[in-house]
Image (cartoon, rainbow, N blue to C red; front, side):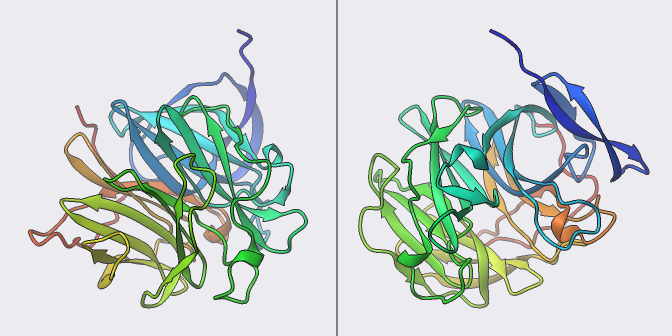
Length: 327
């Protein structure tokens, strides 16, 4: 098998990505995270994480805006894996905006989930012909790809959702498979949408519903633990992270409060919550490595997450030390 090479952005000044140059690096590079942010040679944003076969797979967006540009420039998604939450292997970028022929721009927030040995990657992009943001889905036989468009068309387009008038309400997809095997897709900016997915994971299976949550902005993430469902999301703008709880994935959802404060030097906040080897983790981004507006040059961080006895979540303490290695 021919080993490809790719371009990485590396630090050459003050530990920040203020000046960069191209370096040819072999794939599957190992990164030792000595603290937060965990990735320092390139900007990573909108983290999503999946636990599969004793590893954590971390999928992120890739901020590439020139220094000083007031806007997002994002063309591809990145993939990292770890067995201990400290030593991370960076894999060749498994998915690019160009892999969706119907899309024209913006590799925004995404999430990967496994079902029956296949891996489905739900992404937010700008549609090429239907005005506004859309959600696509790619598929692979491996968590590290390569991935390909599973449909050849968008799964959700802006003309399918009417609750919010602006064109970017169909972003930030997150997926969960309930204990009965039913899969659900959640997404939305300005309104939290959700719908059932068919077992093939590439088609909606019923109407699009809405969930009313206090000060909801975007970035829903749904997880389950000890009989509770948790729906966390970006709250107001600049964004904090809040959450609600329910005994059913269909609600009613009871608002519980803030769990993560403003992330330093970043107007946005975007979270993934996982359990791995007996510990719970809160994965997010901030602008700590940015020399300018960190909202467009973000970096992924990881801190511990703790629950109270009643199942509610304690506020996350954001640290520069990050998390330690797990056995």
